[in-house]
Image (cartoon, rainbow, N blue to C red; front, side):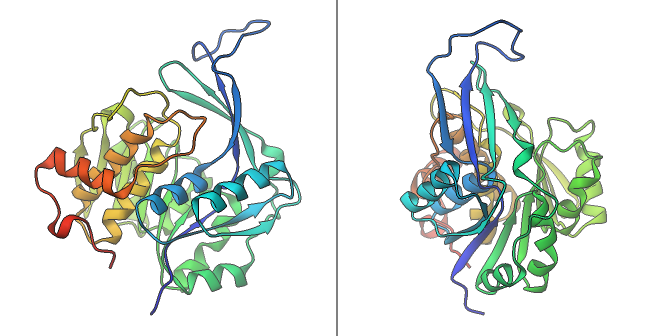
Length: 313
């Protein structure tokens, strides 16, 4: 089958308003003076994965619902400026938005506007199937419309990845995504026993590879039943913000995975991309480039890839 798209990203389009705070949790006060200011920019999980894999040289297409509003214009401009194709479906309730409180150490607390999502939101089946027919892989964000599209992606024969973010390992909302994907990412932040959760996902679902990212502690990689700790990578500059690090890790991992690299090498790509993301202020949407990632990997391992970079198979 001829494909025009390496990674079809479903969901996760929106805008964030970034508010820097003196500490997290933020003590109650009548007011705070905020520097370096309050900034609203395009970029939520699907946008960041689209940006990440596109910057790494993968042919990318993003599909999601967007409102006819200022926030939607910001998302459209981000994709247009970065040359990332975007198929949008009208969202009457308005483009999804959130407020991110960012502490001095780069940690963040996200407040999502739940009025922008409704139970009857849908990605049209014909649109999903048409894009899937020319795609190699789909990365699915954990929004309700995307859950309904999972069977269509499977019927099209695509491999599927997803990011469960800060799942607690119990909430049933995440299970359709966890069990339908071939490659699952999850944050270890709320997992009481990461290994148990990873093995449960692998035992009950389709995934051969499950990864729990754990910030400065690195990541836990379960591949074909074997659990390995993947150490964190030293960031190339001071850490300023953790926003988007998980999406960057997934993007780097996908570069290796779609290029046929072994899981440990893929995880190293992810670690390098995630470390880079932590050096980017949350007011910007920026991803590591393919040459920079590969150069960093070569420096860390002393074993550059044959031919200099992974083939996209």
